[in-house]
Every structure is written in C-alpha cells, then in structure tokens.
Amino acid sequence: MVNLVIFAGLIIVVAVVFSALLNLLGVVIVIGSWILAGHIAGQLMGKEDTSLLGKAVLGLVGGIIGSIILGVLGFGSVAHIWVIGSIITSILGAILLLYFMSARQGWNRECCEGATPVKVRRS
Image (cartoon, rainbow, N blue to C red):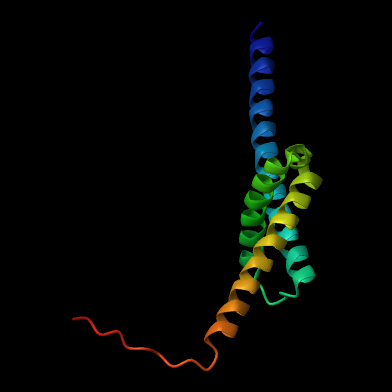
C-alpha cells in the first residue's frame, strides 16, 4: 500500500514537471515565431538593420495588427493554426506596419524638405 502511494506521488510530480516544461517550450516557440516573423517582414520590406529584440517586437506588434485585420476581413481562423498561422499573421501585420511607417516618414520628408521654421506670435 505504501509503495502504491509513493508511485502515485511520483506520477503526479512527473506530470507537473512535464506540464511546466511544455508551457516553457510553448513560450519559447511563440517568442521564436515573433522573431522569425519580424525577420521575414524586415527582409521583405528592406529593413535588415533591426536587432533581435526589434524583430521580436515587430513580430509581436505585427501579430496584433494582423489578427485584427484578418478578423475584420473574415479570415481570423488563419491565426488559429498554431505556429504557421501565427507566423503568417505576424508577417502580414508587420509588413503593413513597416509600410505605413515608411510611408509616413517619406511624407514627412517630402512635406518639410527645405522648409524654414515659422514662429507663432501670441497676442
């Protein structure tokens, strides 16, 4: 009877440790997919000088943007395909983010090139 209790306790401990390792592996896979998505989007948009942390943040923000846009368009189920779907969604969102950021920077340069600052007088 004592051996059975010890065996049951060992099974519970192994199950808890195995579950914790799977959770940790899931976090590593998610962060890796963010980095991969940020890297691929950066390569496609010509932004190759981003750090590893920058690629992870780009992939995370791209995933949020991509999930929202795909959800609005009715393709939200793509993001539910575990790793591949999240990478595709993150890449699409990161590409849109980089496109609008570069378009905004280009607009600011075109708009304000050669302009002189104007002083505003308050009465």
